[in-house]
Length: 513
Ligand SMILES: *Cc1c(COP(=O)(O)O)cnc(C)c1O
Image (cartoon, rainbow, N blue to C red; front, side, top):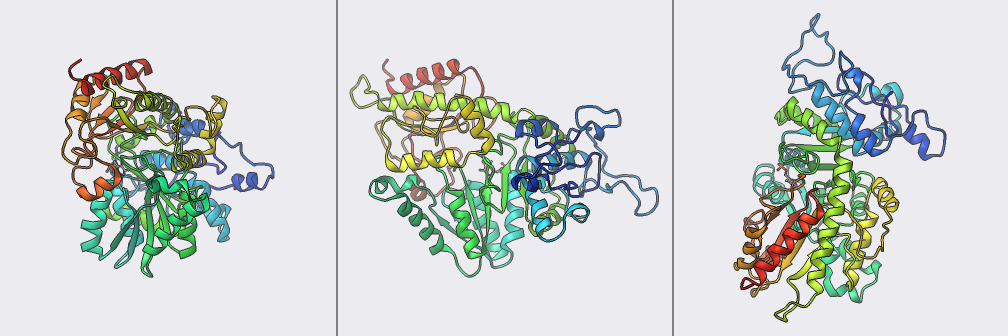
């Protein structure tokens, strides 16, 4: 039995090669009977890359192959593995899994079929699975910029990009590749109250105009993240993809904050999806890793070449841990999301409540893309609708089964990250952090730490921690100030999490009590 999202996977260890495509997905999308059963995300997450055929003892866990080199029976005659930096059986199993979960294997098969290379010809495609593993998310970012921006190219990047990404764009690609980067605001939420008077078409047009104004003749790619860090703004990926197509440039989406259970960036129109697997993919705060997936054969060849040339590959053990982690990705993501929505609602109730001292609640405002506030601005409603629209079909099916819809009272679960401004005497300050720091120090179940996506709940102060290196004027524009707290909501008991937040909030905001 092979486990497939429409493209049968290889039934035994094989050299880096395309899963032998029987194009079932193409058939299913045209309504024709499918040749292979199409399996859902949670099923593929458990079985792709863990086929018992990979193991000489038919074990149900992927064999962990530590060999750096492989015997050749005659010169050049081997089982597809020569040297482990270039290809390793455990990493290959992980890469097939990534390709399957991001829908990149199906996209690659379709692209090859469109070039007249289906079936056996596609199987001969030498670039390997449509998922590529790296030793960190930063290595995936560096590789995609090297592969696509080339020399003297230009990047249009979303403004609130991950700090390590803007560091690479400005301090590495800039001086070493002579690549310029222009940062553009691509979200609805920052349109603020202007959303009151603008129609949805006008809101879209405003974003398209900002992106098009930044595009130059030498622009090679648009890079976005959605949701963004730390303010959890959303980028309308389909809209940006249409701009990218119109101008003949590639769209790269960093999906780290979402993960493929919630967001299928390729199906939203991205050419390439990258992520730090250190976060939700690993899920246990014990592996640093990165991934890239693409259905574009020429991008895949370039990236695969650079992966081998740079050698920034994960160890077989890290690949094995990630395969093990992904088996619970769907389960974890559902619980992270349910807990995070409960946290967002709880904080929002404190944002609307009047405090004892009379100056409003303990919380100034809450950011969670699926949150439906009692009173929301048109821009907030637009972003909530976008959050629903950009969820994967599988995530939507889960939510509908659980009784949630796009306009559910209180909102719908859609990821584990929440940000909020705690109410202090120094709103919007770029230096005063006393109240937020008191809150963070009072927490017992949430751990004060950077990073995100693990089963344990974390809390941090972006101003001084993850975003300490960002230009203060840019931070102020994004709303990153001394009141902003970012939470990575884990999968602990929700009552313990809410009790922890409530206790710390009260102690921080009303220190006398
Ligand atoms: C963490 C992170 C990265 C970098 O990944 P590393 O694995 O730490 O190198 C890139 N993008 C986003 C959005 C991240 O959160």
